[in-house]
Structure formats: C-alpha cells, structure tokens
Image (cartoon, rainbow, N blue to C red; front, top):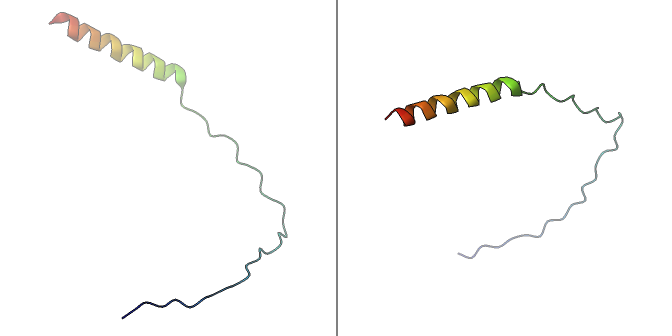
Length: 54
C-alpha cells in the first residue's frame, strides 16, 4: 500500500511581548582556584614520589 501525504500549511505568528525581557542572572561563584591548584600540586608531588621510589 503506498503512503500518501496531504499538504498542510499554516501561518504561525509570535504573540507580542507584554513584559520587558528578564535580566540575565549574575554569574555563579566559581570554584576556589587556589585550593584546586594546591590539590593538583600535592597530587603531582605524591605521584612523583611514588614513581621515583620504585
């Protein structure tokens, strides 16, 4: 059985805005970069100590 499609057309219009656009949210507080850097350096030192001990 063949498939047939009917042609459908419509006009879609946006409704006019009645209120002002919302202000963008303030940026979220980022992670503490100093603490992250300290942790990464500590992990690197620990990894280096493990690989050099063998």
